[in-house]
Length: 373
Image (cartoon, rainbow, N blue to C red; front, side, top):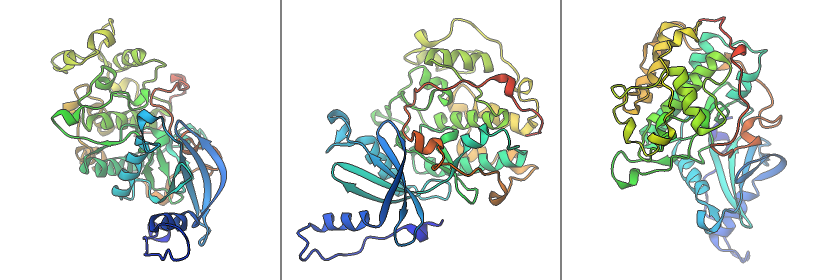
């Protein structure tokens, strides 16, 4: 489904005899373009429906935003929802979900989104699907391309994880769920941001230690965790608590030294969050036994403790991993699974799952090591 097939540009409308203001009439015309059908999910601040565009019969998703608390809302609408709409309107890219329309109804705000029938987490969990090295490379490439567009426009996603990476019917991966995303500045008071972002398993060490000034490195860490999960077929570093998450990270990667991460001690929660046990550095090749040298090098760079030393999304895309064989699998030949929104994909079951929600921990006994990545 192309954006050209579904996106409508506002046209001047006559309000004569309607009793409505021009904006109200325009809103009513937009609302009548779509038919809301089955409710398929409910999250922290949204209810999601599958529906269709009436004149084309094309499937769409309608995300109805709930009214937020007065201290977190503007005119009754959650500020994160307003931010999501603004960002999605500006971030137009083939690897970012497409916002088709927005309309209000009573006290609710409705986002009309392209319908995507799968997410990456569904594919990872489906053991009937074998991932080839080219498959993993293709998904990583599309993720980083979408992220590069965000970062080039000074936007941090702040909640990258497999179930926020949606797969179109033609195999195109798209970044979704921009409810936690925001613009960022490199310096100054405006750079102070919340550290209660990113789902725990994909949250960087600086966030876990209370950082309020951060940049694109937090998204790169998340993509590194996703990269590891694509190769292992289970979450790489998973804990049920924030304090436990740091311990899991240090067990996996070793406790960082001050030489490796000079600013570590300056972080607000360093004294309380830092695990008391010192863990030795473990070579990634010991766990990722099927990974190529290029893959291991890229993974280690993305999971560097010092955020200033992590590569940018552009530098990741220029890494030898994406240049050397095998080539990324063509989009139309990538594994796909029907269902997604209709059969309970994460995108609609919980579009706005809180960043610190509990997860089901994966077992290391399920690690797949048969292919060279």
